[in-house]
Length: 473
Image (cartoon, rainbow, N blue to C red; front, top):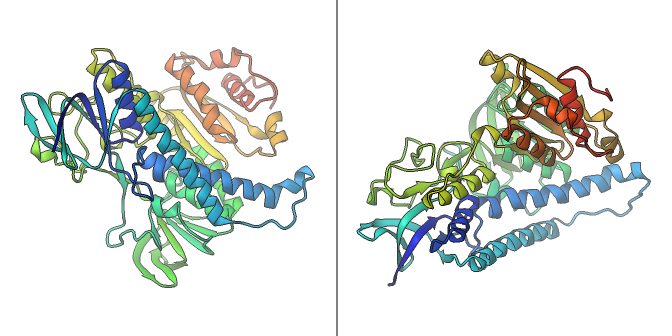
């Protein structure tokens, strides 16, 4: 057994963890990062849920499935005739795995480049000494002056129906289905469920979504959510709202879900595979928080203040394991901020300008407040919208679904929220994030020259529409 001393030890190598370790090293600290993810060969696979079974592999499959749908349904519109089109799911999954490996290897390279010590295994608190906190990983004990916990989250299972990753799937199993299921069920219309449902629908599955809430995408601006619901339904996604899920039976032939629909009628859904997407829970099991008295809340999340400090001196926590949105980029920002706070700097994370994205087709992205939130808070506002069907670049792309929506304060014109459903929404939202971070007005965006033809012109036009002076609609 060896004992190694570090200024900063990060437990968890996901987006929040590995970024925190790198930033700490950049600031001159001796830094280590512990991560237990394994690849198929048993080797290290840093990057957390995001890289291994979340953001990265899902985007790889979304791209592959979108290419397939374009070839099978839309290329003919461009004068491109495809014959003998076939689908090789095994190769598609292999490409996804390769994309994941490239990201894993990239993180290991970054550790080496920045002189971050990497330890492969599960990290847990061992106790506290005069030299700092002891963190155990395998046969080794690391001692750290500062500890940053970034252990992420796990998929929430339905009570009484554990994930077997064969027929009842979490995001992990949903990314590794060997053959396109004839019928696929989704419980929960969350981000992961909709993205995975989109992948397999494009590839030929009949997809049904069962959502307990009476509204679709309740966190999204209502007007945008309605537009998305219309688009998904047109594509063939069957969405049932206000359902109450009952008994779930699994067998060799698939899964049977008993439920009650919004009218109170008993229903049954028989599917080959069932994806459960009902949220995520903080991952603190095995951290041995009791060994040092680290405070957790009733959900198992680590309790922190606004600056990510825990109840223990020099112990910090970031990302999915603490309060706030479970988003990879939120974790990254917190990781950087904490490393800078340890160095005596003023780390910055503005929760009001964290963008949200759902990578369906059409994509959905937003930042700031929704119209329903502004109404509930009695904030006077003005709204401006612009449809992609009136955008020249969207027409050329053959993707005119959706709109851009601006919400600005009625008196000051400060941008309060921007909501997009449509092509490349994930990229377009960045302009709104920058604008809101600098407390820009809708007039500021309306006065900025945007390239023509570009999708970003829809952003400018929506800003113009706040003052009822859109030029192209």
